[in-house]
Length: 452
View 1 (cartoon, one colour):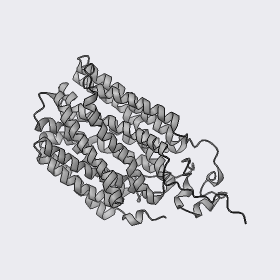
View 2 (spheres, helix red, strand yellow):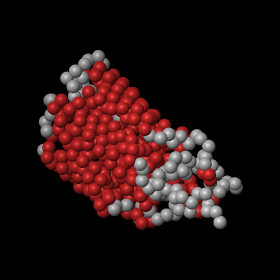
View 3 (cartoon, helix red, strand yellow):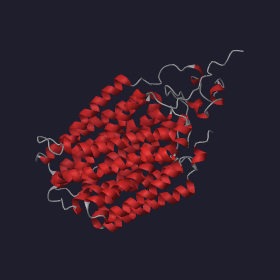
C-alpha cells in the first residue's frame, strides 16, 4: 500500500544558521540602540536642564503605542508573513532614531527649548512604539512556528539572548561613538545607519515567508472544516495541524486570542508585574549613578560610568540566558521564580550601594534575575497555547512588555526622587508578588512541555 504523501516530519527543531543570524541581527540592533540611548539620556537631560521625571516620562507615549500596536502587528504577521513585519519594525527603529538624534542635537545647541525638545523627542520616539513593535513578535512567532514544544524554551531563550547581547554592545559602544561634531547624540545616528544595513540584509537574505500564495497539501483546508484532511493533526506534534513549520503559513480562521484566556492569564500577570519591577530598576539606574558618584555638575562625564554599569548588567543577563538556563535545563516556571528571587536580592543591594563597584554588582544581580525571568515568562506564554496561536501570543507578550514601560520608569524615578527607600521598597514588593503568583498559578514545567 502506498504510504501517505505527508509522511515526513513536520517539525523543524533547529533553524538554518543563516536565518538565525538574521533574526539575531534584527533583535541585536534594536536592543543595542535602545540601551545606548539609555546610557546617554540621563546626561542629555541634565545638559538640557530638564528634571529626571520628565526624561523618563518622554518614553511613556512610545510604550503605550507599543502595547497597543504589538498585537495588531502580530495578527498581521499571520497574514502577511513574519519577514514583512520585521522589515516594518526596522524601518520604525531607523526613522525614530534618526529623528530623535536630530531633535536632541537641536535642543543641545539652543535651537529648541528644553520643553520643545522633549515633546518633539517623545513624538519621534513614538515611531518606534508604533512601528518598531512589529519586529519582536514577528521574530518570536517565526522561531516558535519552527520549533517543537520540547525545544521552544531553549530556542526562545536563544533569541532573547540576542537581545541581551545587544544590551551589552549598546552601552559599550555608546561612549566610543560620541564624535566631537555631534556630541552625545552621535549614537543615535550611528545605530540608525546600522539599522539600515540590517534592513538591507533582511530583505536580501531571509526567504520570503508571506503566506499569500496557494497552500500545499492539507495545510490548504481549514483545520476543522468538513472537507479538511485530518491526517496532519493525527501524527507528530498536535500543534502541527495549525501551521506550516517551514513557511509559517497559518490558517485564516484561527479564533482571536483573548488577553484573559485562562491558559495565558498567570503568565501575563507575572510578566506585567515583573516587567514593572524591571522597568523601574532600569529607569532609576542612570540617575542613581549621577547622584551617588556626584556627577550632576558634569553630565557628560556620566555617560562612561552609566554605560559600564549597564554593560555589566547586560553581561549578567547573557550569563543567565546562555549559561544558567541551558546548564540547569530550567523550564518556564523555574526560570520565572528563581529569576525573581535573584532580582530581589540585586535590587536590595542597589538600594544601599554608594560606590561604582557596589552599584555595578547590584545591577548585575538584578539583571541576571530579570534575565532568567523574561525568557521564562515568554516561553510559558508560548507553551500555553497552540502553534496556530503563536503569532497572537507573541503579540500579547510584546504588548505586556511594552505596557511595563508606560508608567514604571517615570513612577520609579519619581519615587526615587522623593524617597529612595520607598522607591526600592515598591520594586521589592513587585518581585515578591511575582513569586507568590508563580507558586500559586503557573503550570509546572513538566506539564507545559508535555505534548497535548
